[in-house]
Amino acid sequence: MDLDELVSRLGVALGIGLLIGLERGWRRRGATAGSRAAGIRTFALSGLLGGVIAALALALPKQEVGGAATLVIVLGVAFAAYSAVIALFTRAENQAAGHFSATTAMAGMLTFALGAYALLGDMRVAAGAAVAATALLAAREELHGWVEKITWPELRSAVVLLAMTFIGLPILPDAPLGPFGGVNPREVWLIAIVLASVSFLGYVAVKYFGARRGLLLAAAAGGVASSTAVTIANARRAATREGPPRLLAAGVAVASAVMFLRVVGIVAALKVELLVLVAPALPALIAAALTALGFAVAWMIWQHADRDEYRSVKFRNPFDLLSVVGFAVFLAVIIVLGRAVGEAFGATGAVAGAIVVGLVDVDAVTVSMVRLTPDTLSRTQAVLAILAAVASDTVSKIAIGAAIGRGWFAADLAVLACGCLAMGGAAAWLTFAYLAL
Image (cartoon, rainbow, N blue to C red):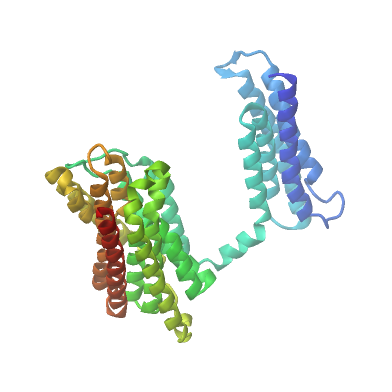
């Protein structure tokens, strides 16, 4: 390591200490001088100390001592000594103040460790971790207030969702299992995560933003991932009367509009030059999206007349794990069935397979059609398959509304689906008629 790099890394170590120390010093800025275990100067020195110790250890001759490298031994001993000192002074501060807190000690040890890592590892990672730690320390009141307000069902659902994402997902095999291309267990679990996330997002949005804005925000965000998931979540809430059916249907309309436009976004993300592939489908998708938004606006204006129903909106449970996983498995079965239909009829079965798979996953059809064009499918076949999947997904909302939501919610979804299909179909017919001229 040359001199310039060494100075730069020590500067980052010092900056890490100053950043964390600034938050610690500001929080105890009214304390009497000498009554604090650590302030801005102590934390700045802690970061620099970690960097200097790492630099000294790095400069020592490389050798093994009892099976451990000299670098590891020096850093371990120095960190243990620093931890003992900061813990001792933090304990004395707690006794003088009459309270219990390990935050200062933990922040000091983290500062030392990040200072050392700035010398030995990636400076960007060390600096980013310091920023994250400072933000966490600064959000003390907000975090404590949030913990005081959170209910047990909310905490349980958040923990389950985090476990599904960061524990369950990484350990599942990422390879197809079964016939007709099989089902990827990780993809099925990802469907379950999306369903649970959309339901949890709607619960949180309504709680913190109110029924009207919360439902629409959650629907728009959920529609980016899966409009089917939004439909299922809102249908369940309509069935248990957790909100006005028309307001919940408006959320589905917003998610549907996002889904129509998302098809174009997926193609652009895969390869911008392939946008010409879906050009004939653009008028139909835009017409359907505008129709869905029109229904959402109309229903919101209609529902606005009865504000009392907004006050009655209260979601009781973010999501139920067993039902979410069960429905994800059902969707996976539908996907396998769609692949079987596609393989049975070859290229001519692309539309038929797209109709089946589109019942639950328009994105998979869009990605497949883009990859199969132009080697296996013509542009017209691919566009027809994509439109068929979108139409199938729209029709599936009628089935979900009738089977789960029922009542006025199901009726509104039927009107929504028929309106989108009519306008989108008319736009598609005019487009292909024009291209045939």
